Every structure is written in structure tokens, then in C-alpha cells.
Length: 271
Image (cartoon, rainbow, N blue to C red; front, side, top):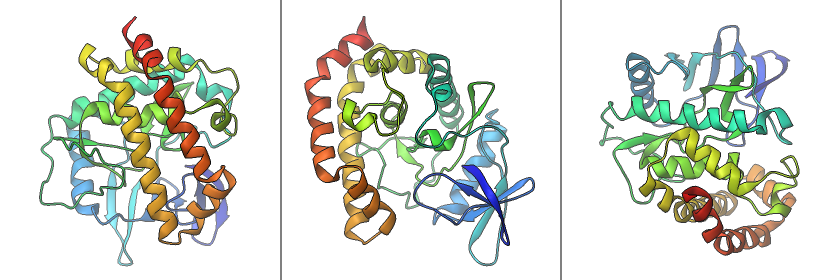
């Protein structure tokens, strides 16, 4: 999230959709609503640091009114419409590198199976790796043009590494039809080439590369269902965003575009 201005609660941070107007910075700390998985998530974040991944916030404490305090990570966070500096090939490759570092550290940490991890954006196939599931530009901190840290682990849940790469690709390649992409991204982005750059930056295996286009289609369907649930619940932020971004026709167009270009993406990842 990026700074917006000082309020009585502290310096308001903007970005994202789930916690709009509820995240504040107090000097070296960020205070925000605590997810229902907060105890397990804080344990995981501390374990990540112990396993050498220092590119995530560190939990500090829980407040009496159900909020969490985490360390603030300095750097640049891009907000839509996304500037060209965050969409360079170097930036994209660094996102893949950072996600791989997260997964390497997470693979050494046992997932607490007694916790009801959020399923809204989780891998339907399940898995033993705690995936971030929401590596969008608003949740990546940059320094000197490279991804330096990940924030906002609220949607973390067990899954496969390729699922987390697919969810990341949706935002960073981006895996969007040209009409949808034009609203928030610089023009002229070469989607197949950028998909390959992300896969190379992450170090996807040959098997995962073969699977990725199909998993991206699965992830897109999951994200559509997530939006549908929020709209059905009367969430004003998601309802407004759906209306402003073309309604369900946009999702129909996007899913058709992904299906039409499936083989193009497979070839880009293979060749």
C-alpha cells in the first residue's frame, strides 16, 4: 500500500480493495484489521524470517480491538493505473525471483492443517505450500526498480506453487485481454513474452510450464467466483468496481480470450 495522508489514526495507506480506509502507518509500524487466521499467519511470518526470507512484514502485536501491528517495509508500491517503471521486464523477472524465494522458504514450514485458511482465492487442488494468492502490484514493495518485499498475506492458503505463479501472472503479465488491460496497464505489453519472463524469473520446471496456461484459466474462474460472492454479499467496493470495469461481459471476454490463446501461451513457455 502507498501513503495517502495523515489522519487522527495515523498515516493512511491506500491500495487494494478488501481493507479500504482501514490501514494506517504509525512510524515503523503498520496497523490493520487482523484476518481470522492471524495467529497461524503470524507464526508463519515469523518462521519465514527464521528460514531466511526477510522480505515480508514481521508481526509485532495484536490490539485489544482486533487489529494487528506489523513492521512497515519502506519502498515504492505501484497503484493503478500502473506506471511504466513497474511493468519493465526487469521488474517482472524480479517478481518471479521474489515469489520463488518465498516458496523456497515456505516449503520448509509445515502448514497448520487445523486452521480454516481462506478458500476464496485458494488452489482448488490443495497442496502443502502456504501460497500468498494475492501477489498483485499493490502488494509488492519495490526498491531501485526491483521487487523487494511482499505484503498483505490475508488470502494465504495451502496450494501448489504453480497456482501462486498463475495468480501472480494474472496481475503482472497481465493475463488480460487488450480491452481489459488498457484500463490499468501501459499499452504495448507483449503478453506471451512477459509470461515467459515471469516463468524464467521464478524458475518454473518443464512440467509446471506445461500446466501454467490451464492453471491460469482455473485461477481466472476462481477470481470471477470471488468477485461474484462479494457482489452477492452487497460489498459496495466490489459492486462498484464490477460496474466500472465492464460487468460480467468483461469476465466473459477475458475467459474467452484466455481459451483462444491457450496454445500461444504454451508455445511461449516452451520455446
